[in-house]
Length: 136
Picture 1 (cartoon, rainbow, N blue to C red):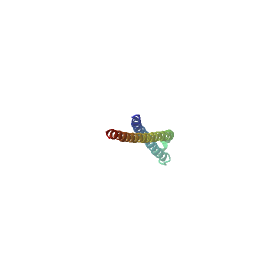
Picture 2: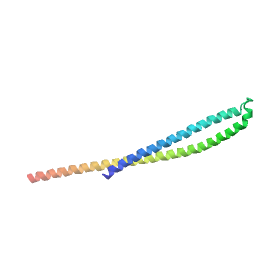
Picture 3: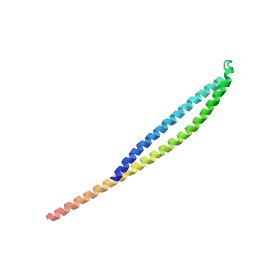
């Protein structure tokens, strides 16, 4: 009975771990999306900075500040992305280990149940032999 409990507990833990893994994936995708948006904004800023249009010349200082902020944000997001990728790999590895332990527990439960069924069958056969010997 304790073995049955173990596999059920592990099954619940696997489900929770897979949920945590999914949350990590979502966080990583948000960081990647934001990083892409920053890259697009950086490209637009560089395009405007290098433009020969006289309209943009007075705003060059503003564009330079914007470019510096975008570059800094991209660096922050790059670090965050690497951290999230590492976290996701850890969570996935934990989930895989828990799933493997759950499978092992199920196999052990099946073996115990099979063994018990064989023992019950042997006991029944012995009981039948005893009753037939007592009658005969």
